[in-house]
Length: 48
Image 1 (cartoon, helix red, strand yellow):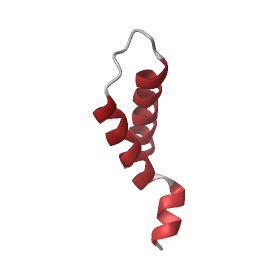
Image 2 (cartoon, rainbow, N blue to C red; image 1 turned 45 degrees about the vertical axis):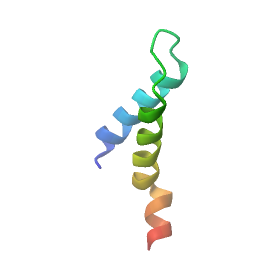
Image 3 (tube, helix red, strand yellow; image 1 turned 30 degrees about the vertical axis):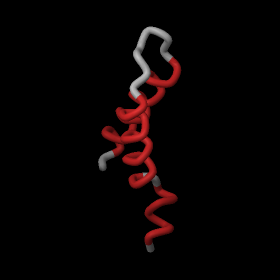
Image 4 (cartoon, rainbow, N blue to C red; image 1 turned 180 degrees about the horizontal axis):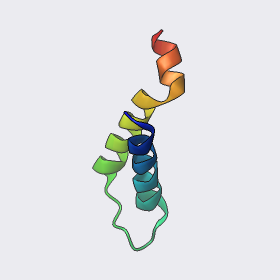
């Protein structure tokens, strides 16, 4: 995942969790969290 994709996913997650005008979609929140966890630098170190 590129830095741009990572940042876009973080922004979408932030919107889903914090924007009162955005409908909360739990399935999407969990999907984004899973993607971000796999792509984080900590995940890369743990896999090594």
